[in-house]
Each structure stands twice: as structure tokens, then as C-alpha cells.
Image 1 (tube, rainbow, N blue to C red):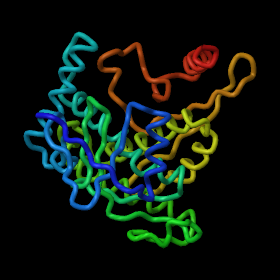
Image 2 (image 1 turned 180 degrees about the vertical axis):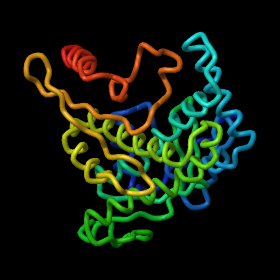
Image 3 (image 1 turned 45 degrees about the vertical axis):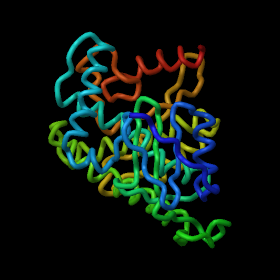
Image 4 (image 1 turned 90 degrees about the vertical axis):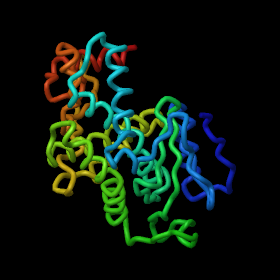
Length: 283
């Protein structure tokens, strides 16, 4: 089935943020649906709500990851690992729907699961906003759908709430297949928020600002999230600063390649981190 062409519409309060995202990261494109515009169907598209229902669409989503693991690593992955990979491959781009407008424009949209469609092979998201939060001095504060909040901390609370509203139903469904309980699942959500925006901010040349923003967003004790942003600095062989972080959850990649842990994995010692980060900086 062919993928529908999304109709053009007037720029929204979020359009500039998503345009900038696509500019620095062409692998992900966000299209906003207008009034009366149907969400794309077929051709690999799936709504987040269908994934959260846990039926045939979720089975097909997991089967794609199972096939990809066999192709990439020449072996089968455990069912819980496949489910973990599949959730990550959805949640990483999905969290950017919220964090990128917040980081670039200080606007936080709301997207319940029924309002987000995803096409993973094309790297496309189609969304229908139900409104957005912003600060009192934002020029968009008078637009329809704007919800004005008092200050930066209130806006950070909107980010946490909006992401939790969207990811919560998916965590409930993926959790049993991943063999993880609530704490581990919300640790994963913490990591998706942090590592997604951290990566995009690096492409934007604003990594330092993003690090500070994320530390304030997730300082710890911000339920349902578990853990902090986890940033810290190491010192390289020539005295240079090497930013890193400690993940709040495990991505399970070690089950496929035990010798090849992520650089942010708590299993990766600082000596290995320094070696790998120094090599990456030199390259």
C-alpha cells in the first residue's frame, strides 16, 4: 500500500523546531496533521495507540526488530531483548517530539498515543497536536491551544508530564515482553529523553546548554522517572574534558556483543571511556 502524501498547512507553533530537527538530523522528519487530515496508514505506518494495544501491530513491530538483529548480528536475540530494542527504536524519536520544541522554542506539545503515527524505515512521524505549553513572554502565548505556565520550572514539569502521558501506555504494554517492572521501564524513559536531546544538541552545536537543561529537567526524584540526567566529565590524556553520562537503565546490547558495551553503560569503566572518547574526539 502506498504512503499517503501529507497535505501542506500553515506553520504551527512547533513548525520551526521540527524543521530545525530535520535540518540537522535528516533521518527523522515530523509532519503535523491539519484539521480533518487523516493520519497516514499502510506502507509501514503504525499508530502509537495500536502498539500500546499489544495486538498484531505490536507483533509485526517486534518481528521487524527480530529480523534486523538476525541480519545485523547473525544470531537470534532473546524475546525480551528484541522487545527492549523495539521500544528504544520507537521511544528515542518519540521523545524528541517533546524535547526539541522545548529546547529550541520553550514550547511543550501534548501528543497522546492516538495522535502519533510512526514509519520506522523512512524515519517519519506524523502528529496531531492537542495544544502546547509556553511561557508568558512567548509570542505564541495568544495562539489557539496555548497553555501559559508561570516559569521555567513549570515548563519543565510540562515536559515530564507530556512525555509520561505518551510513553506510559507503551511501557505498560512492552514491559511484560521485556520482563521489566515499572522502575526499570521508567529508567529507560529517562535515558531516552536524555540521550535523544543530547545527541540532537550536539548536532546543533549546543551540547553544553542541553546538558544544563537536562540536568534541571531530570534532577532525580521526579516521578515516574527514575534517575538523573547522569552527566559527568572525565579528563583525557592531554587534560581535555570528555563529557559522558551514566545510563539509568541497560540497553541489553551486551547480550549480543558482550565485549562491546555502550560508552555510557555503567558496565564501561572510566579507562575504556577515556580511550574511546579520546579516539572519537581525535577523529
